[in-house]
Length: 258
Image (tube, rainbow, N blue to C red; front, side, top):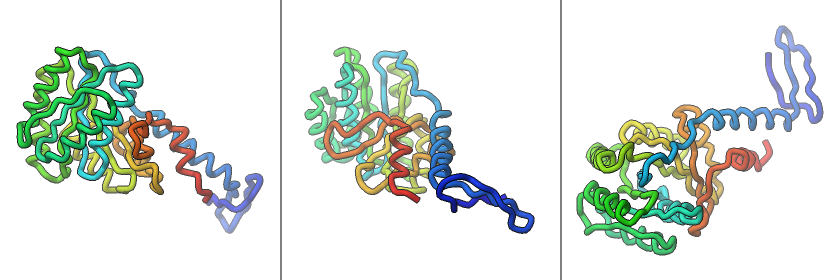
C-alpha cells in the first residue's frame, strides 16, 4: 500500500497494478504527523517530584549552547513562581563564565555563590549547598563548566560534583538539565547520550528557538532517549525562558506548510 498526498479535500483510494494507493489531503496528513509527535512527548517521564529541600539542580552542556544565560533565566523563572533560588558558579575554569553568571544572577535578583578562579568545582558545590541550607534557599541551581562531551577528565569532574551533592542532600542532584542548542541537529543526540551516561541527565533545555531553528532534534531526543524537554529559550531577555508546551512546539514545527 502507498500513501500519497495529492488530493485537496477528501481521502480516496485507487489501484496501480497490485498496489493500493490511498490519497490523503495535505491537512489531514499534517494533522496525523502532529498527533504522532504529541504522542511521543506525552509518553515521557514526568519531572521528578520536589521531595527534598533544598532541591539541587545541575545544569550541564557544551560551550556555546547558552548554558550560563539559561541558569540566570531559570533563576528568574523560578523566583517569579514564588521560589527562592540560589545560583552556584561551579565553572571555575573561566573567570568570564563566573562574571557572566554574576551579571545574570544580579538581573534575576538572586544570591550567587562563587569561588576564586581555578578552585575545585566540587568544593564550590559543597559551599553552595551549605549556604543554601543555612539561608533557606530552594532550589539550588549549579552551573557547571561548558565542557565538551568527548573530554573524559572533565566528565570525571562532573561525576565528582554529583557525589558531593548526593552526600550533602538525600537524592541529589534531583534534576540534571542538559542545555542543547536547537540548531545542532544530530550532534545533539550524541551529546545527550554522553551526558545521560555520565551525569544522569533527566531533562533537556532547548535554547535558540527564537531564530530559524525549529528544534526538530527535540523529537529525536524524546523518541530515542526518552528525555523530557523541560524548558525552551525563545529570546535574549531574562524572561525568555519558558516551560515547554508540546502543543505550541508542534504548531511551531509546522508553521511553514509542506
